[in-house]
Image (cartoon, rainbow, N blue to C red):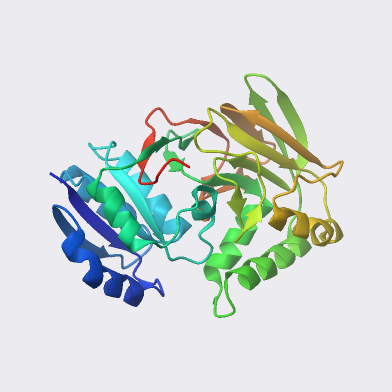
Length: 301
């Protein structure tokens, strides 16, 4: 039997829109359903794990990349990792939604749930030296992106996502110092100072910047983008190309692919990592494709 749970970000500006849509389409939704709201950071992960363990067949993240990140990690930690996950994008940036064209289409989502439509997509799995693990569905990166995420998550976003991220990137570029890392994969190695090192399962981050135009969560590898010693001038010159999904032609930018990466740094305490817009930890780590794919509620395009 179909059992659906909507996990709504308690801070989402779309809560009223969700309530209106649910009231309109609730009688079309097959099986049982429930609605839960988050109250703090990490709550969606806990709720997703508990609901998946209670044999819910479909969990819908109503929020942005951070909410989806928590729901995915909750499902993967549960006894029911085959539970299908969907998205009603109502967050700050909604970057992963852009890769799979997952729009706020409530009636279409209901049809897909009723017909049990989903596609199996890859997840990234980060394993730190202490054994702790985190899954990511969109993008993980280290370097400048960690500073940007922290600034955005502390910011008041009343001027909108694009301005909030743009401001955070510029301020971070003024203060960030490039860090030396070493990367080892099955096929190649790389070492040097980085501004950003991006491991992309999806194409977009930073509120619509197409950092990895070749990334695809259906592919059996990550799209890797290595950004070395760049300046604010470089960023401002090329940001338009990122928004258009164009590869950057710059001597400090390298594009590669990999399915497994070992990443170390000279200063372990300074090596911070973010995934799906959430800071996840410090230190060296290993990145692989997760052994369990995610059943994402989406039609194959």
